[in-house]
Image (cartoon, rainbow, N blue to C red; front, side, top):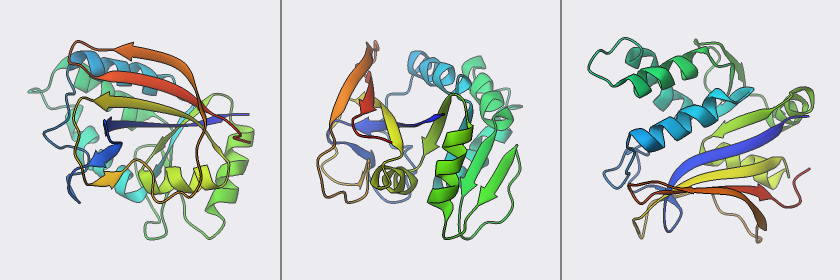
Length: 193
């Protein structure tokens, strides 16, 4: 059985976007080579990735082109290869096709389909997107969090999860500190099924 792992860059107050539409690319992020390589290593080890439409379209717009963009450093080329080659599932009610080794699911039973996918997968399944992560959390299917916390308090903006009405107990599995001041914490979610 696989495990769903939600990885995200966050501010100290657990915001992932400062303003709608900044797509997590705000100036508050401190993504340097060291942190990028850590994300590369994590994503390269995933069995597959499950992404909501918004996150998928952000990635789709950037990473396929990055493979051949000679102005980018090697660690970004490396991530571009990881993302485009990786097996992916896009969860969307509005898109029915996708490229880059991507299967699309989007019916009313998407969470049940993801539960079945988890049961038949060996290894970690990356989760991209706050809406999808919240749905998996509510269903008791989200197993782990990997948070790269940037030393900034935004005070407003898109939260890590949509409204959630009960406490989430976590167990720290690992932590790492980067020269930029970013810390990466890997947590297990208690009570995941």
